[in-house]
Amino acid sequence: MATPAEIEKQPLAAPAEAEPPSGPAAALILAGGIGVFCMGLVTTLGEASTGIADGLQWNDRVGPLSGKTLITVIVFAAAWALLHTLWRRSNPPLRSITITSAVLIVLGLVGTFPTFFQAFE
Amino acid sequence: MHLTYREWWALVHGIIFGAFFLLAFSGGLAGLWSLRAEWVTVEGLRERVRRLKIGTVTMALAAWGTVITGTWIVYPWYRSKSPDSPKSKLTADPATADWHTFGMEWKEHVAWIAPILATVAAGLVVYYGAALARNRTVRNIVLGFFVAAFATAAVAGIFGALITKAAPVH
Image 1 (tube, rainbow over the protein chains, first blue to last red):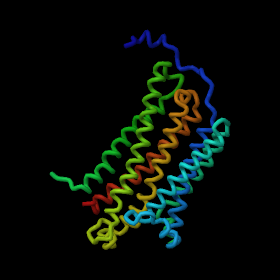
Image 2 (image 1 turned 30 degrees about the vertical axis):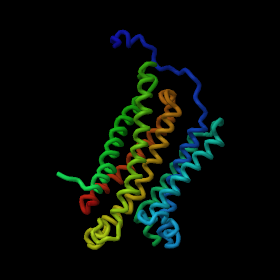
Image 3 (image 1 turned 120 degrees about the vertical axis):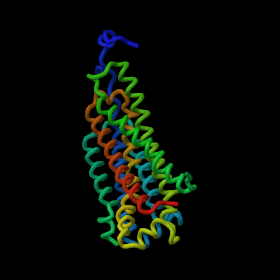
Image 4 (image 1 turned 180 degrees about the horizontal axis):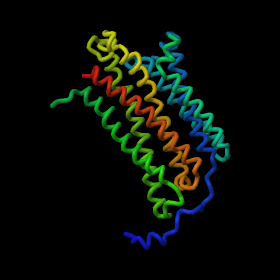
């Protein structure tokens, strides 16, 4: 175990290697926003139309929640894969992509709030 | 002292995965907050980043485990058409109907947002690694996703506990 004196002599974690490209991170951040927005959208659509709710019933025991959750996971994974392929070597602006993702997340949260989606019944 | 088969699954869904999620969140939050290049040595940074990767990936896996067991194993028992099911009992009485029409309706949907946000946070930690200590913007983005994942899971967890108290799955 290092003594306090030895620890003091150790170099601090100063800037060293170059930053990795922001593309893969931006792909993940935006895919997350798209996934959350998708959950809000299918929840509200399922409430607005019995036809859509029936179409979302991919499993009888779980009911329409089965379709909503599987569609959301598929959309999230597909968006992640597609955006990653498009951006893996580029440097898209992380700040504006995060803001876009945050807006999608807020909209998704609104879409999953019962007082909101039950208004479409 | 005895737990039924369904109670065991409710325990795995709410307590086992939930406890892992909570532990990973507290460790990850402290680790992320204090991960600054000016505060740690190179050796310390390497060790912290390794722990942070394990913590955030564990949190994401626990979140996926919670929603998958909750939706595909426990929820069918909750929503069964039988008059003894928790949903039937809650909706039969106007005094308790809101536990389903508001509480469960919110919980079952908002819960699925937590693993998505936790996966984004874990993915960013794994991708950036030690560079997180130098990049304050990315660190703050990770913190935002990490806390949002916890907040959505907390809504689902609190309603889950309250609904189970009002009408447990037996």
